[in-house]
Image 1: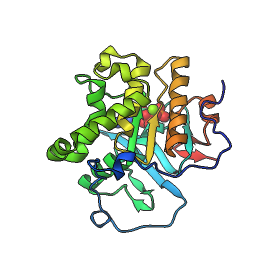
Image 2: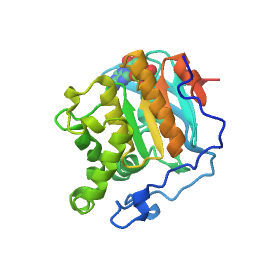
Image 3: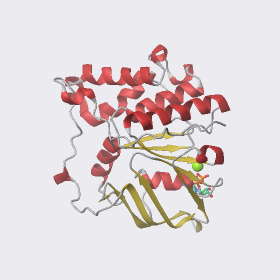
Image 4: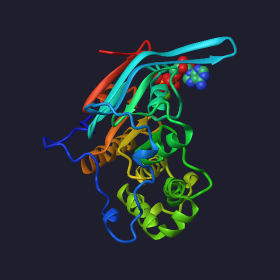
Length: 274
Ligand SMILES: Nc1ncnc2c1ncn2[C@@H]1O[C@H](COP(=O)(O)OP(=O)(O)O)[C@@H](O)[C@H]1O
Ligand SMILES: [Mg+2]
């Protein structure tokens, strides 16, 4: 297939797009996280995300499933990294740890030089809400609300009731703008069950981007889509990467997709194979 995530030979983009609203009156304020509230420990690193020697074993009763066994990972700012591996090799487990949805048994994860795997729950939730966007194979949209309301949800969580009320107009404008950007302007008020698979993934991408994350984690985002729709989603991700300098780490088991990314890591036997 043509290289869906192929980049033109242009210089790399600024790491993070400044949202136009963030400089205008009535704009949605930046996230409330302040440096003083988060752990001050910083290490110098060329990577936006770096994981070292991750170990993860699932335990149920006496049964143990060792999945990650000394797994390293790093994502370069503004680039698309593919995480390739066979089914059951631990790709989703790794992505969940990187996204702080689960904690490693051992090892360390740094985001912009700041350790994130051991943050207290509130800080971790705030970090995830403000810095990360995540998309999944099965979209994980809220079934009872419209595409627009799904996209608004992270901002409601980030801003809280009063903050959301205060900035409602700007937030809704941003959500609509993103839904238009992903090609869903005609589906704003449709619920997930009224959308096709590709449309649901577009809504999920808009939702992942509404809080202007620095990093997008994608777990087999085309795994449930037909080939053409999958290509469209990959093209969309590539465009967003180019336009916004968005860093993407994408799980796939498709070598063709992986080949179209900036770099690929292979997960096998709980480790990255070089
Ligand atoms: N919550 C869980 N409890 C027990 N075993 C799990 C759990 N989640 C995943 N596993 C097991 O861990 C292994 C890796 O799973 P996963 O990370 O989902 O792999 P992949 O995404 O590469 O297909 C699999 O053998 C799976 O059955
Ligand atoms: Mg998986």
